[in-house]
Image (cartoon, rainbow over all chains, first blue to last red; front, side, top):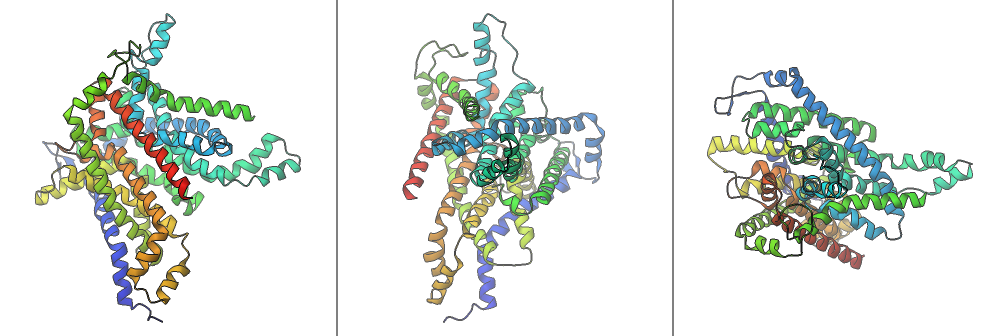
Length: 287
Length: 259
């Protein structure tokens, strides 16, 4: 029998496996976040660069201006309702796919849009909604005047729902696959009607999947800037657009960093609430 | 009830596929504007392929995806091994750090890396925003996904197999190569595939970490879309969707054959 590894040998192996990855995460995830925090406390120089003095002025500006508070509110509002629509569309779909005889093929039909390039999925809606697009082609064919569908909040909603729907269906599908259907029979045997039987026996089993799906959709929907940028065209400003603008043409990195910190704080708050209700295991479900 | 469920499902599938089908149809449409079909043509594909720039953007996209996937798969697999095997002081902190790239909106990830590159460049004059910085940025989010996928596989592993190898006198390296790695290979492959497709798909992080001369396909699509709808983009999109479907079909057949 070989001797047990010496503590020195053990340490060497630990550094070899964890070392490079941990180093990478510290250098490219932790430190950039700390730099962002410091930048959010700095000021804008005459060329847009980051300069002292340090202070909370960016945050004060952010929360004292109704315009910015409104942007946060709008991002949460659009993100929330898009997620609700996604759940209404995706929840029954996950059941249909999981119970179908052609499960594999249908799952593939959900996965294909999931892996289709994000920009193409957003672009597709420009083609549908534009002035000479599909919808207006149909409207004018009936002799009606063309509608102004771009840019609009409606288009942003449709594209957000479209883009993130597969993100919701996949984790929920995994939850539906694991359902213990004997509980439904038990509910029937005890005299429950179909709706009540579903509500009491099946629905609770899908709740963890629902939570995971909600977060997977809600967080990117609140943080996106591309959808509002391409389909809301200046009409719909979300917090992501605000951040992009500060790092782009507005050249105010300090204020942009503060807006990013606010967005990040909201996400972490949401995750903290999620971890409290679902436990730590729940976090693993997000991948 | 069942009929209602199936009606709903096919309505959602129609919603998912209608826009894609419109793009595919328009890529073969003679008319440059609008959805009225005026005749069948391959012109937009010919124009696309005669655009030398496209080839450059495609090469850039693939370089970034291949290099970042290789690095993140190695780092992520090692990290997963270490996290499952050892207990140490900062373990929980490291695990939470691992979730950050998964959950934080990509715009935040993009600007924080932009800030990092800017601060370092101010200090030592390097690195310029280029393919190199895009690769660094992509590895930073891919590594988290690879680690979590491989770790899930490692937790299913029967620890007695590794112990048996050790008892038979195998060195740690030999045990890893001959026992552990083959057993977790499906996890490593799925992690790598996920990392690869995340890199190909990424627009936002690339947008903030790209410099002059490092345009990728998503960046190109974005800038042309900003200028207006164009049939060449329809053709490019159709090709990309076609490749996506092909890869997924082949992947499904491959996994089915193995299992």
